[in-house]
Length: 547
Image (cartoon, rainbow, N blue to C red):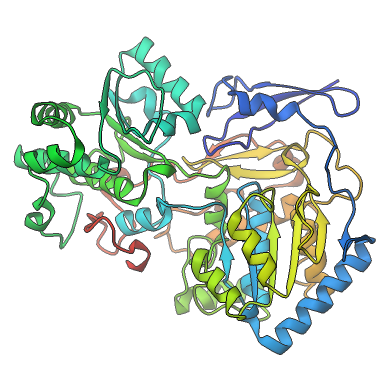
């Protein structure tokens, strides 16, 4: 019997688990009492990690429906992809990655795609209707979630936008409820009939679907009228008059379904609360997330304990994917497609051919596949059969590869690579609040399954790029990722992991949870050119276009 501390990996809270590993594939899973994200708590999804049967597993590489060895599989994939690149150019290859990968997997995938395939066509982990990365970059100057999970216990009031947020992140809600009992924290819930959240709250406001942003913006305007805005925090060309249109008390009442008296009482409570945390889940949408940022930035309730917008990433390691840039609109390490960044990242990677700009994602990527501009699609992760987007994409593309742990529903793929399930992975993950933790392998890899980073590495080596892809273990990738965050970083980017640049293999193995960025924007200094945060208006604009 062996005890291993690892991660849950079922949502972006980043709970730690304590696994008791027995004979065969027997596991006993419990919450890790020393992990800062959950302190021993664990939801039903986390406890289900002990379901480790091999039924339905993909255990060998498959080519055209027939089992082959790894050497032949890698050689065939390399020949096909090289031929496609030669004939159709670097923009002819696309990547689909799920939320079930580790940061090291995302790093190698992104480096291979953008630095050597020369393509930024990446559909990132899960759908992100909230567009958190673009919102935070537009508001704060960098994709940095300014909260820590401990802010919940430090708050006087938690404003929860959407009951489904509580359902999606049950351990987080357990912390909220515990703080209500022990510290008198007050919980206000904004929910709607489509939300369906069963959350015990001190004040439950049932609103019309899609109206949460009206209430948050109305609360901000009330605070401004009452002298509750911090003029030093935000710099903005936003017209307060334009923001006020449609946000008078009677308009908000009509559109939200609440009475004017109820809305006024909410506004006054928000105004009177010094330590406010606004929890916004990924299902709440862009408008609600941007409005929450505006409320906290304009009133100065940010960058201090117990006062912050808390925007939750949808997928388990979505933050890790964004950190390494494994999405269509980022380059790497919180850097974008500027000429300086292209020069720096290209030099650091020794890139063969570097993607020069953002790629297609979502519906735009699907349209490019339908039009024949994309000739190869590589899907990586556990949702290869679940996503309707992927089902249509793989049927339309001439060459489709899939790295997955499962066999069902994969008949349309030309090649299959056997990959691990969560409890067989080894690397790091980053929670929504920037907490980096170690995912340690609990069970051995079955059959010929291999880590996703290993598959990318072997293919890159076969294509002649071995000097840039020399990884033998996850620690090698972690060190390179860390060095890239610090490379030519004069200090204007908070995302700088240089303290771990010299980490040894044993130190990586024993890595304990740590949060990068310390207290982001401490003292009210943000990552913008003038050091001040921006108000976001209108709420439905394309925030990714804001530099």
